[in-house]
Image (cartoon, rainbow, N blue to C red; front, side, top):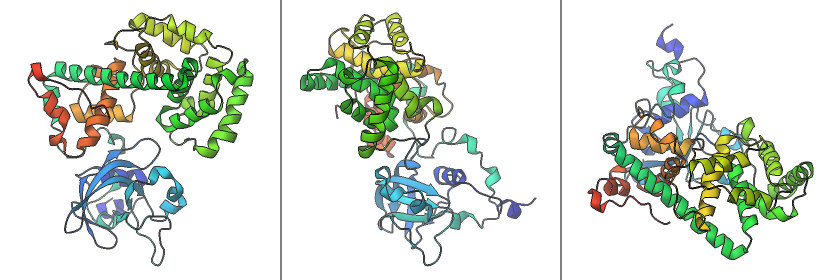
Length: 413
C-alpha cells in the first residue's frame, strides 16, 4: 500500500489534536480560512479534562504578528462547534482558534463562533501531501511522551540537581497549603461555623476540579446541620438538591469522568460520611496527629470507612482540607514535610514534564503529596505567568540564585 492510498484512510479528531500539538508534524506556515497568516508560538497545554482541547495557546497573527493568548478547540468539521453546543458553554469563552480538518461547506456559517475567533483548516495544509499518513502518528504518545519544541530551561537545571528540585517543590507545596489555611481562617471569621466550613471544603474536594463549584453550592444549599441522620435519607436529599436546585445554577460536568468518580458515587460517599456524624466525625479526625504519617493514615482510614471513597481521594482531602484546617487552627505548628500522596492529575504531569523532561522518573515526586501540591502551585504561579517564554520565568531565576539568597516561594495572588 503506497502513501497516497494511506492518506485516504479515516482520520480522527485525536489525529488532528496530535498534528496541532506536535511541531514536527504541524505545518510551519498556517493561514486562517480568510488568508491571514498564523504563527504558532505555543500550541497550548493539551487538556485531557472537560473543556477546550488546548489551554493557554500563544499565536501570532497577521503581518504585524499580533500576539494572541487563549484556548484552542479541535474538530473534524467546522460545523461541529455548533453541533457540540460550545457557543453557549462558558468553558469555551476563551477560545481564540477553532482548528478543523475539513473547511466549512460553501455558503454555510459557523453559528455561535465569535467573529474574532480564528478559523484554521489544518486539513487543507496536510490532507493532500503524498508523504502524510495518519497511521504513522503514534496516538498513544500524546500528550505526555511528546512535548512542543519550545525550550524548557528548567529541565537541565533540575535534572542535574534533584535536591534543588525537591527543595523548590517542598517550598511551593508549603506555600500552597499555607494559602489554603489562610483562606479557611477567613471563612471561619465570616461564618463562625467550623463544621459547615469543613463539610463544604470536603464536598468540593469530592468534586475534583470539574465539579468543585457545584459541590460547594450543594453544601451551601443543604448544610450539614440539615442533612438527614440516615444514609439513605441523606443520599435522597443530596441527590434531590443536586438535581433540582444546584443544576439550575451550575452545570454538573460528566464528560471525561471515570465511573468510580461519577457524581452519583460521590453523592453516595458524602451521604455515608456525613449523615448523622456531626460532630463525631470531626472529633475522630481531630484526634489524628496530622504531623505524622501514622496520624495521616488514621485520618484517611476514617474517611474511607464506607469504602465508597478511595485511598487517593481520601489523601486529596487530607492535603486540601484536613492539613490546612489543622494548621489554621494551630493543631499543628507547621505544614508536614511529608503528606500521603493523592492521585496525580493532568496539571501535575504537565508541570513535571516541563521541569524535568519526558524521560524523568515520576517516583521522584509522586510519593509525597506535598511535592504534588508544589507542582500545582508552580504551574499556577510560574508556568502560566511565563508561558510560553520560559526563559523569562521567575522560578528559573529564583532557583538558580545562590543558596543563601534562594527564595523559591510563589506569589500570594
